[in-house]
Amino acid sequence: GIQVEQSPPDLILQEGANSTLRCNFSDSVNNLQWFHQNPWGQLINLFYIPSGTKQNGRLSATTVATERYSLLYISSSQTTDSGVYFCAVERLRSGNTPLVFGKGTRLSVIA
Amino acid sequence: KAGVTQTPRYLIKTRGQQVTLSCSPISGHRSVSWYQQTPGQGLQFLFEYFSETQRNKGNFPGRFSGRQFSNSRSEMNVSTLELGDSALYLCASSFSVRTDTQYFGPGTRLTVL
Image 1 (cartoon, each protein chain N blue to C red):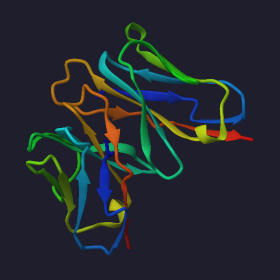
Image 2 (spheres, helix red, strand yellow):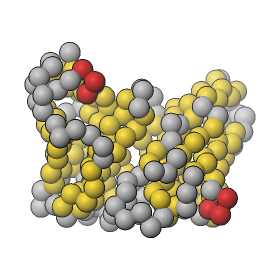
Image 3 (tube, chains in turn cyan, purple):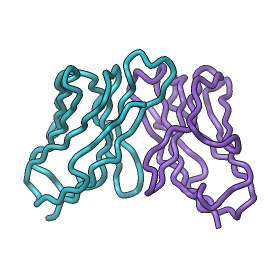
Image 4 (cartoon, helix red, strand yellow):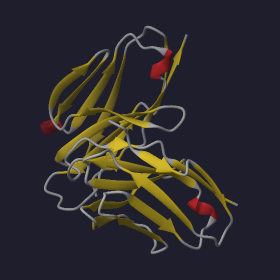
């Protein structure tokens, strides 16, 4: 099956700093989503981005499908950004295979 | 529009018992997927339902089963619980099948003693 690797596994930031999270995947995809899981376990969809660039406030994401990676940028981080960030993908022309999640990047933003 | 709801939020069971978890998708969404999250294995896919039909099943034993009703609500059942079934069970809904934004519920935290 498709492999999804996220880096770094852990990240500690001072409030106000910027960060870049990376997601590498091993095969062509037709679905890539970024999620944020808050400390209470709720998964929030951040971006649906199988290719291209999107921005939403302080967050932006870029997927370079031909090179099989996606980046999530967080600018001017806030303590509320803390949690785990997951990348999930679905392999292209996969028929009925499900979303495969990476192991996540745990972000801690310190005031 | 109300989000995805899951009941119950917390559950404590003993080994050998069975459990039923419920998920109500966002109104208008016809696809429901279930995931198990554990510290060791991360997020793993359990099943996906669309219009009452199971479209896919993850690599879990037959003790794990599910169904979807005509109103798109879904239930999953785990029989003969084992200690390793302790996990956060997450439900996600989307308008169509997986090539679509998925919205997750708050999860059901199951503890098996």
